[in-house]
Length: 297
Image (tube, rainbow, N blue to C red; front, side, top):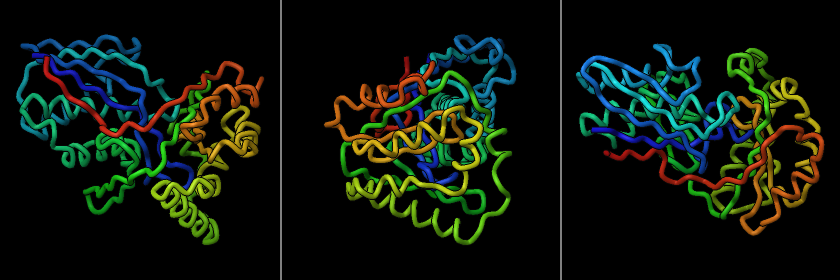
């Protein structure tokens, strides 16, 4: 028996929601698992990930231990659409897929809260794994060793123009540049901006998104690691048809929200940014409302 797990890309933080907010997008990594008598193989992933350090394999083993799955070995086939280390949750797709597969082999693939707890334990924070599991827009709170996640309904039909650069940025490096403390003024600003962003998405208050996505905790510091970041963000901010923009996760990808009716948004953004997008990929995505899916073959 083979199990096919499909996990959506995710975009975390939404500006001020550092390690708290995230959303799932219609871009996917697919993983096919098959138990064996003893051998373990990984195919489809870049060569440097086809070994014992593979994140999907590590998550599968931890999931198997947690759910009581006994097995000899496992074959994992990876079919990747989500670019690695670009701030679109590629590592979260690996973690979620590995855990879900282990649970699926014992008939428990819909134990989403338990899967979330383990995925957060592995990842260290829930902002990417939560939407990958539940779909849509999520906000999460850590307490003790548990995670409380809530799906947030998004009122309007927004589209997410994703700007993906031709270079990577490690999460480790992007966290090192963050300050250990921030001022009370900056803390209040971030709380108020996140509240405005979430309320605007719920109520379809388009006018609140541009301000709501502003951040003082991580974007000003991480932006210096991304070539052209400040110029690109200023250009997006000046476009009246762009409802808001933010750094996706740890970066370096950027996200711009437009309305569904703005059918020329991608073309216009490409023209406005011009040579700033040298080598960048610009794609339009939608919210994924399902999270991971699991099928038996």
